[in-house]
Image (cartoon, rainbow, N blue to C red; front, side):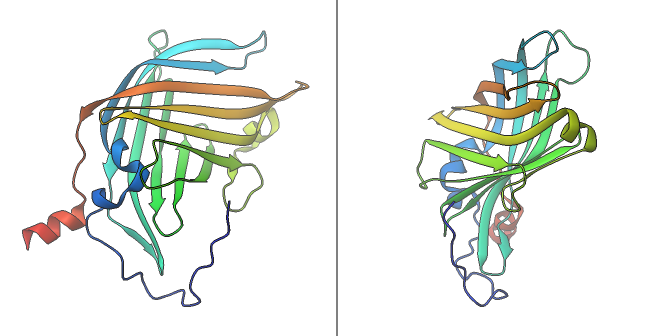
Length: 216
């Protein structure tokens, strides 16, 4: 990641802040809305070798109000990814977080949290109209890091997470998540891979600040 030099005034908010998040989402703009994926594939480690699973999912990508850290300005999406495996009764995977776009630095951030006791923040750069981008998180980083509960840190240490996004059309996009694992007792890392193609169910919402401005 290229280190960006922010203004010495860390309190004054950016004068470029706009009420319309959707118009300022950069490469995240095509991902806003509700989505469904029916052809997901998952490869995960088991004691007797890799296990392959198919899955279906829904993802809600909700447009949020602009976010300001003094001079730093983000536009973003809040997401909930809900995955089912038809062969299992319990939810196969549940994930929440944010996709954020910082126009000033052309930075894309994904935050994620899963109810296995693990969180991460993956970061990458992209042009505003990019159709592909990759985000990376690394264990031990204080900027784009990974934090795991004690069992996962012991048994399935996670040195790296990669998220690759491809915009296929206005109504379709795909992802590939690669979670590099170091299973206890194994001599080499294992690439736990999840991938799917999403198709649009409904269009994006308008963020609350914009709705308020339009009503005045």
